Length: 316
Ligand SMILES: [Fe+2]
Image (cartoon, rainbow, N blue to C red; front, side):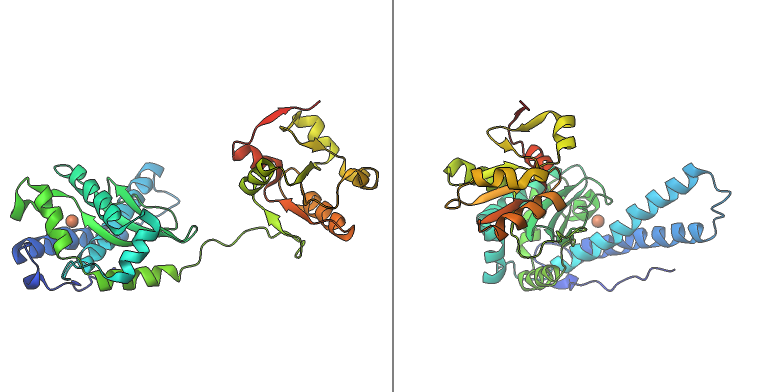
């Protein structure tokens, strides 16, 4: 496969304080250079006999391919971020305010990250993380670092080649010029497109549709309010092996359900959980619901409680 050069996404002669000479050099030498490297590496890989090639040669080429590919992608994003009037739009300001507290707070962090990379090299990237539906400013000291599953929507190039010709060592003035040229409507369009990307779907769905799951964090809050009964229903062999239990929680054998269900108060909600949040906890919650309780199960079970940092004690 041959990777194709993309036309520059901003008009170099319209930029405010970034010279056409700087942008042309950046596009031709650095973006173009990365694209040429990417194609040369890819060609080498296509001609490689994978059965005979030494592992370190293959690894080295694949690493270089990743760096070159990401360099081309980030440069395209960088140029696409420029060409605007630098005036924040309401839509994008609102989106940034939601995830950073305020638009000014976002800009202060993004700018400070750019200043901090001045004289060194790297990228500052505004990235959308579909898993959480949020934006984050990401530091990248190389072309290859990226947030897994993230969708970059704005990139600030802090390699010296991006500013030295116009600004010398004055990286701060370059960062300020970047903001003056920021294309906010285009940024918001990329944000809208990123939001259409769905986060990873759960690999395992609880099989008990009508019983509600609650997170370990929610259970902790419910316990603090004192208005919940929580029962650990891990199978007996789990409890005897692990020898620990969430502090303040009673264990009841799920196989002896009928013997202990009478201890519970129907006037208060009940949360049950097992080891990992699958069948036993859900199944017990279903039984409790059928018996007339307001019952839920705790997602991710005892393991989730510990992963959250919930207190445990030795099993009596
Ligand atoms: Fe660059």
